[in-house]
Amino acid sequence: MADAPKRTPLYDLHVELGGKMVDFAGWEMPVQYPMGIMGEHKQCREKAALFDVSHMGQVILKGDNVAEKLETICPQAFTALKEGKARYSFFTNDDGGIMDDLIVSNAGDHFFVVVNASMRHQDIPHMARHLDGVEVTEIFDRALVAVQGPKAEDVVGTLCPAARELKFMETIVGEINGVECRISRLGYTGEDGYEISIPEDKAVEIARAFLADENCEPAGLGARDSLRLEAGLCLYGNDIDNDTSPIEASLIWAIQKRRREEGGFPGAARIQRDIADGTSRKLVGIKPEGRAPARQGVEVQNTGGESIGAITSGGFGPTVGGPVALGYVATADAEPGTKVNLIVRGKAQPAGIVSLPFVQQNYKR
Picture (cartoon, rainbow, N blue to C red):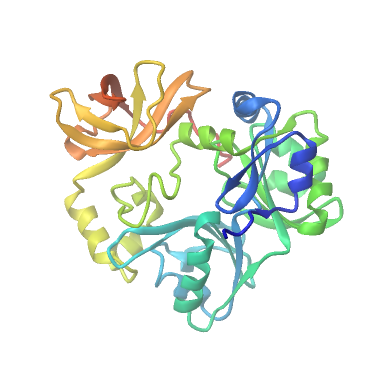
């Protein structure tokens, strides 16, 4: 018998607020609230939305030379990551594919890592196995919420003035309602905002305090997905996976110059080769011309009818006002402005390759 889905510390609050609960990566999570996915998406783009992301894995790394040791399993330059800074990262495998993407923060006396809910069973043993002499501790007594949107600074900053001073990818420990929380200025919507790690027994109280602000409403997984898709942000398991090189996925920006040159991480030979020689395929934005969304797995053809790739994520973009998609196409066909056809239910639907993101990212630099 399959295990019953787990519940986050905010489960009862979701139910109280009318959240429609679904099983997501083994957790009961709200896909939407009475406002609906379109309303929640608009709320985040225009004001502020509160997301429960407590299903993500939160990990503390303690020991000597943690940064150097992390560089043996990730292609990022962690020795250059200053205290109070966070960095987007990923684990690579021996073939140069992406095992998972994650956020790594230098918290001073330790490193704080957030991994995807669906991959925590892989990632935590992977770190424990390879980070020799580092204490790898997954923490289960804290919730994680994201407050995202142009009004997020006011919502969080009213309760914790120090949060206003943070810039994108910076992190502090600050007090909210007298409770010590880790507050990081980052997110997965393309908007300004924060992810906040809260002791689980105070999570409901603090979530209610955010929601008491007239600019903040709860939002679920549905809006989170449409927001990240418009922002051109990859979803692990769809747009990146064990077979995808970071260079194919247009993630070269996440590999610092020193690491590109010196290697020393799993799969470095393939990744360095991809940087030098280019790749046969590339992740691109795809905009269908009609109203019908193109979902994962839809074939992409060139105008001559040849198969050149496939959609990896797709849906309706409420801010764009039409369908949007991410997918891999042959590099020769990846130039923005290229016309393509999407084979939806056996019929060719016209579409175009477009520059990412679909909606401008509004991070506070």
